Length: 164
Image (cartoon, rainbow, N blue to C red; front, side, top):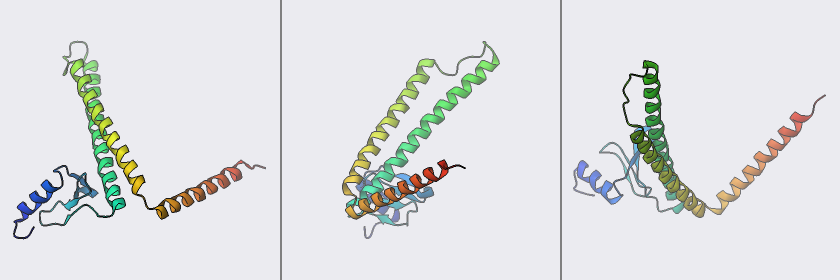
C-alpha cells in the first residue's frame, strides 16, 4: 500500500476485506468477517487475516459473536421501546393514540428476530469451523481441564452431602 494516502490505504484495505467491519475491543479495532482487522485510527495498523487457520477461525467466531450480540441488543431495545410506550399509553387511559400499528410493531420485531437467527446460524457455522481447525494438543488440554474440573465438582458435591 506504498504511496497511498492514509484514507486511500484504509479504503483499499476495507474493500479488500469485504467492507463489513464491526467495532471490537472497546471500539479501538475494526474486525472483518474474514478475520482481518485494523485499528480505527486512519494511521493505525492494518492486519491481514492470519495465515494460521485456527487463529483466523478464532477471530471469525469473535466477529460473529459480536454481530449476534448487536442483533440481540437491537431486538431487545426495539421491543422494550414498544413495551414502554404501550404501558405509558395504557396508563393515560383509553383515549391515548397508538404510536404504531400492532402489525407494524410485530413485523418489525419479527424482522429483527430473523436477523438474530441469521447471526446465530453464522456463529454456529463459525464455531464448527473453529472446531475443525483447533490443534489436537489444545483439544487434549481442554479435555484434561474439563476432566479436572469435573473431578473437583464431584469432590465438592460429595463433601457437601456429608453431614453430622
